Amino acid sequence: MVTNTHTSISVSQTQNHQTPTMKSKKVKKQSKVSSFSVAEDSFPVEFKNTLAKGKHLLTKQDIKAGSVVLTEVSPVFIPKYSSSFSLCHSCLEPVPKVSVQRPKSDNPNETETVEEPKFKCESCQFAVYCSTTCMEKEKELHELECNILKGLLSAFAENPSGSDFLRVLLRIHFKIKLQKDTSFVPGSDQETPISLIEETPNHRETFEKGSLEKIASDIRQLTKLVPELNNAKSISNLTTHACRFFSNNTQFYEYFYRGVFDAVGLFPMVSSYVKHSCIPNCIISGEKNGKIVIRALMDIPKGIELTCSQTELYQPREHRRRDLLINRHIWCKCRRCSSTLSKSVDRFMDGIVCKKCHAGLLIFEETKEVEDISDLMKNAAILDDEIKGKNASCSNCGNQISVTALVDILKEAIQKFNVAFNNYRHRNIEQARKLFESYLKEFDSTRTLHVYNSYIVNSLIPLTYCCRALNDYPSAISNCKRAIEYMTNSGALPKNYPDITELRVTLGELLLEYAQKKTSTGGWSQIQRNVIKRHYAEAKKVLQTALEEREIVVGKQHHRYIQLLTYINFVDRASQEFESPQTAANPQQNPTKKGNQQTKTQTGKENTSKKTIKKVLKKPPQEILDQIASKSFA
Image 1 (cartoon, rainbow, N blue to C red):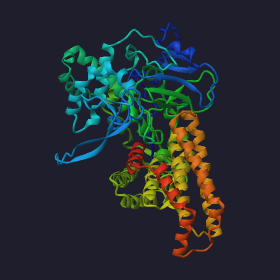
Image 2 (cartoon, rainbow, N blue to C red):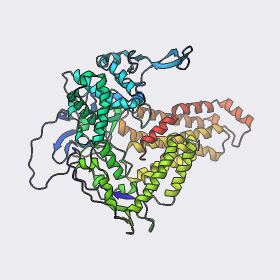
Image 3 (cartoon, rainbow, N blue to C red):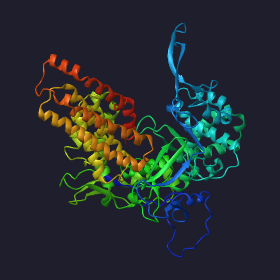
Image 4 (cartoon, rainbow, N blue to C red):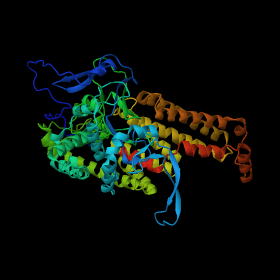
């Protein structure tokens, strides 16, 4: 079903996407000079603040795709708990490890050898560093945090990741306390002054009472450990900072796994001026030292607003809007969300095909007005009430069906998707594969859901990894290609968007692994040789496309770009090995077991190649699960 339950909602209390109040006389008001306007001398942008749009950025010249339009170093960032023992707490570089002997937990009389960070705080056993330089740099701040961190992590022993936002609040408090007289220096490696964190919108007035009570409960864990914070004024300030964090935090820096961010922080300039859009023209990439870089995804003319996305884009309009409302406290009124549904790419995202003509999509256009975002935050169900007694019409033949009936179809599709995905999440790979294949047969092959429907695409992606885990490379490659084709052709994602790039990298890996697997068997016919050569060539082509896209998004110096370049070089070497005279001399018929052994002994290359590909290309199962889970719209 395609529904547009939130098309023209006017929002009075959000800073983002406000509606002009009148079209009569426009009274020009002298706007306050931005605290960040000095950045206009370093970047091709203008800082604007208008009644219609609030704070936003405009290009002051034509910008080419891949150009850096803005950078910022966070005044307060942390490695997330999941990466906190592997990345430096000062600069986010990987920490060196040393082997140490320690008593076994289950038998203290015996010892075991374990890897531990070389540079760490011996007191809290939590803060780790890449060098003595970083340890010394953080010394003053960490001395204030050390004992509190021990108590905080103890209080959150059952859910240590839940302490991340309190670690951020603690760092805000002490950085303000240690505040030096520094000025904002844009384009440098100097962090934004902590005093400018007040510029970051907090949206506190739109938080539900229950959410604020949960925040207050968590803050009490902190005030127990920091007596100086146990007063009404400090608790109120911490609550405001918590609201800032939850509605504006930026997760960044994918060091270990693609699609899994290792750090989180607040970026006052970016949060205040770079607005969300579901058709973004810019992208944020993370670097070490708490730095983010914003680059243009495409060529952008002079005078255009610069935007980034703060939600998953390949999902239905109502899903995106609710996600942004709940997690970012904004109601999106971007062009994609505000345009007529029947003319928008959003008609595909939860598209149900008309059973009468089998060509059009069943679309429900809604014009519900909501005057106050606070009311919407307290009762999102007011939007659902609008579908009662309404009909959806086919975009092709005009056939009508009740919206309630369409909702039932979509609910069934969602429920069956969730069953399959939960099996995948719990690593029941064989069962998950069966369920996803059954799902696609029921909803895709029968043309119940449109091929671009987000649940079709988000079934193909985990199905790809299921087939990969089961060594069924032909099926994995086929499913991955379909996912790329659907996501690209739907028009739901802008050019060079990372979601498609990551799938291209996966496809390149699959083709390379499959070629390596076939190469290892030996005794190829000419047809088999041509197939293997084609896999190598296709792997290089798709990885080269991904490299071009990644250059636009992160630049040539980023470790993700360099990693992909390494993949391509490996493809070249593997292909050359396959074409070498020794390999080409392989018999063109199936050899005997003895002949196989002799060939392997003579070349000595097959096993080396297999070991290399496992080291370089295969991803840990958990990474696959995390990556897919992060991109699921379940």
